[in-house]
Structures are given as structure tokens and as C-alpha cells.
Image (cartoon, helix red, strand yellow):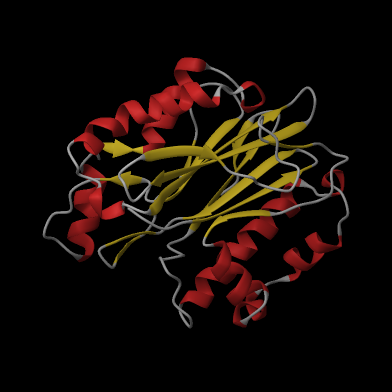
Length: 267
């Protein structure tokens, strides 16, 4: 199932993660789907999958019946499920993540379907992004790792780390209270930049986003403001899609969590 707009905002109290709740399949919008996944361990960690979170054969269904079928039928390839299983088994925070072991684990799930040539329709495309985030409550540091799941034209599967900011390292991207304030969108980023931040959707942005832009450092941004700004962007994007359709659906509600001293559901 494809789609997603996710927004991550480091704050003085931890990392805020927000996402829309719409997934798109065969032109059908399936709403109310929570895309922020929390592993059993390590603590203060979350996963968001953008793009095609799952890959499976599509039945000859449409509308609400298709959404119901997808909800009840486990997909053979589920990047969220695979990532949660890896995190739970390794129990390793982002700052000490082993990217090669993770790649091997994902490939173990994808490999049989590649060998059977069941993923040919995705050849030459980025299938998904896997965003793994964690918060170190002792050092007050938020960390983000992003991976791109790509299928090359010759059928080769690649899982490679992606730069989140200009300061991304092999260990990912970290933010502490002294870092510059930042808002990190994932997935429908070109649409967000063109049609919301610099286009029609500006009219839907509220004071929360404007107030966020006035802050200079992560330590100046409260968790409440971070959540309000992130959700403001998602809501503005969802409203904009009713006028200017996005490449994939954005909307269907929104959810947010805070990775802080504890993991807290904000919405």
C-alpha cells in the first residue's frame, strides 16, 4: 500500500513524529491507518514506512471492500513488520545501529520474491523509505536513520542509508537542545514544498507553524509546539490535495507520538 506524509520535529522534550493516516491502493483511499509503529524494544524508538509499506498481490476488489481485505490479510512483504522484528531482536538504539545486519534481515524477507520475479512491476523505482528514530533521554539527543528500499532495473534490491540533513553521518542524524531547530518531512516532500509551503496550501497553515519558524534552536521548541507545527503541515497538505491532487493520497486523519522520557501518544 502506498502513500504517506510524515513529519519529524526535534524538541526540548524529545522527538515528535507525526504522520497522515491514508494509504492508497489501486486508486482507493484507505483511511484511519496508524503509520507510526512502536517496537517492543528498544525503548523510545519508532518506525515510519513511506511509499509502499507492504507488497502483496491485489485482489479484484475496490473501495471499502478492498480496504477491509488489506486490513485483514497479512502481506508477504511488510517493511514495517520486518523492521520491528529486527529492532526487537537486536534491541539496539539508532546511535548504535548495524546497517549491514539490518540490510541482511530485510533482504531475507524480500529475496524469495525477487528470485520468483514477483516484484518486476517495481523495477527501476524506490519502493519505500524506512525511517527509524530514537531518543536518548540521558543525553537529550534525538536520532534519525532513513533507508531507501530500491529495486534496480536489472532486478537488484538495494537498501541504502539516505541523508536526512547535510549533517548526516553513517550513524544517522542527531539533534540535541543546542542544534538548530528543524522540521523533517518524508515521502511527499516535493508536493509539500511546491503546493503547501510555496503554493496554495499556505492559506491553511496556522499560527503554530509561524511560531515554530520564529524559534532558533531545538531547545526553544516545546513538544507541544513541535506537535502543533507537524500536524499543521499535514493538515494543510491534506486540505491542499482536495484542490491539487498529490501523487499519492495525503489525509485520512493524522497521528503523533513523542519519544521523550517515555513514549507518549499525542494524537
